[in-house]
Image (cartoon, rainbow, N blue to C red):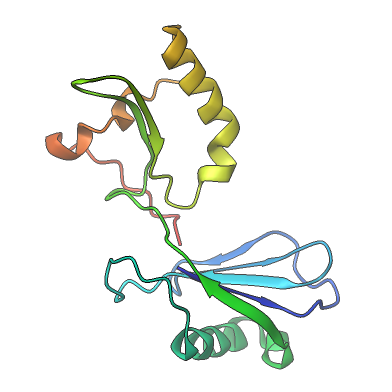
Length: 156
């Protein structure tokens, strides 16, 4: 997953823009910089975290088409990192069979910060053995073996 950030610009974007057909998201932060990110599904799944010209060229072309005023924006920096996805782009919640005391809350497919408050509550309830505020039983690790996936299509 690669990201770039531009120099600060005049306010032009309100909420985050997501282009699912382009596999892209664009967000203007309060001080004016524009953050844009994208994953390349053709890249191999390995431990490399390199960012290169192809990403810059692709983002320039795509963003220049979608939001022409970005054509002249200067890119300050770019970087890449691992993007944790599950097969259905849904998180995994619950315990690991055969491993007492291990609780999972992972694989958020880009939604981790957004789901963090609810996740903290759920994991606390699991550890304390309390009833769960939200039923996440369908999001257990076993769903992959059972073939009971819940595909999320709003993930870039």
